[in-house]
Length: 179
Image (cartoon, rainbow, N blue to C red; front, side, top):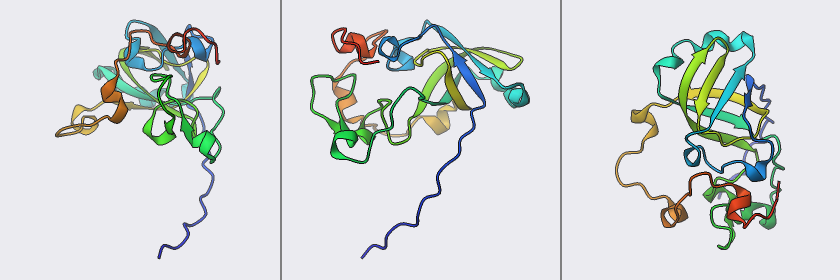
C-alpha cells in the first residue's frame, strides 16, 4: 500500500534574463527550435549573471530553459491533462506528459539552440521558438554524451510525423489563431 506523498513546497523561479525575438504572437511562433534553424534571437541576461557565460562560446549548442509566460497552466482535470498536440491537430487528445505543448502544469520551456555568439551579457542564437520577452530561467550547454540517449530511441507518436520547417500553431491548424 502506498502512502500519500509529502506536500510539495511551491517552487520560486527567478529569471536570469529575457529572450528577444521577432515573434509577437504564440500562434505565429515556430513550435520547435529545430523547425526554425535560420532565425536568430538574443538571450539578454541580467548583468549579474554575465560571468556565468564564461566558456559557453566554446559550445555549438545550448539548452535554453524558459518560462512560457503566455501559457495558462493546465488544470489537473481530464480536459487540462489531455490535449491535442499542435503537430497532430486532427489526432486524438493525449496526456500532456506525452507531448511538448506549452499548456502544462508548470509551463517550463526547453529549446535546443545553436550558439552564434556570446557577447557580454548576451547570447545570440539560432532556432527561435519563443515569443519576444520570454523569461529565461537557465542556460545549459549541449553535451552529446549526456544529452543523446544510447541504444534504440522510441519517440511515441512523434515517430509518425514530420515537423515542417517554420511550423507554427496557426499554420498547423489551418491559420486559425489561438494565441
